[in-house]
Image 1: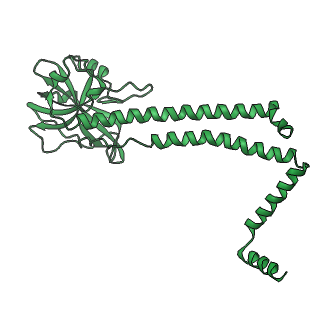
Image 2: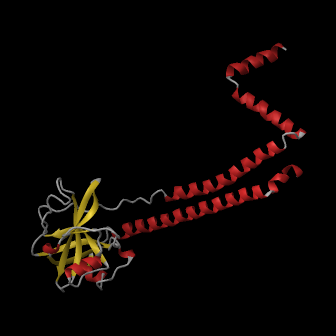
Image 3: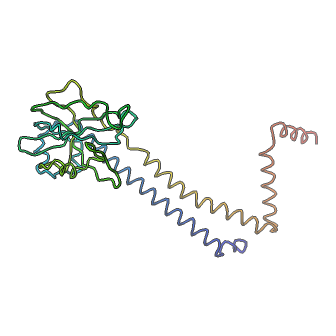
Length: 281
């Protein structure tokens, strides 16, 4: 045991402490990835349960203007009203076919006087200006809309937008612009509208059923935690060999390792020559 006395020094205690701290950090990151996976699985469950469900009347799903729970995300709802095209807004910096674009938000005035915000789809950025070249007009008169619910978005500090545009789908801000009783708990991604116009923005695609790489990342962080202790053990072994290089037993082991390493590094021709030399003897 005296040959290992060096491992009880303050220096090696510090190395052990570093390995433990590194392992704790890795485990925390592993748990974070598992938590992100749970969140992704919950979202997939909402897609599976809600996206293709039979549409329900808006007032049945959202009885109050600020009603909405995350469990209702993607739920299809139907409503009938008149588009307020003059109050239409463009949401900036939205992806469109792998490029930049806009989303078209058109308020829908319902029979009870309340307003529901309908995201009618996406448009590409214009060729010569920071706006779509053409915004297809919403249907006039009474229209029946089916849309899938989504929560409003937070305000992004420092983000601004020119007149007729907004940086995020911040429903409270939109309600203040409209000065009408407006649904602020959720808005809707349009699926259908009747009567349907000849041209409309690009409809939002169904979310991909992909939980992401979180589970594999979680395993990787656990492996990294183990690597920290493997590295500590390797360094400890190397230090043992250096400290005890004059010990007779260690000299024998070192020679045995040297012979093994030499055999591993010899070419096939050198091995054959050695066998022939042994045979001649």
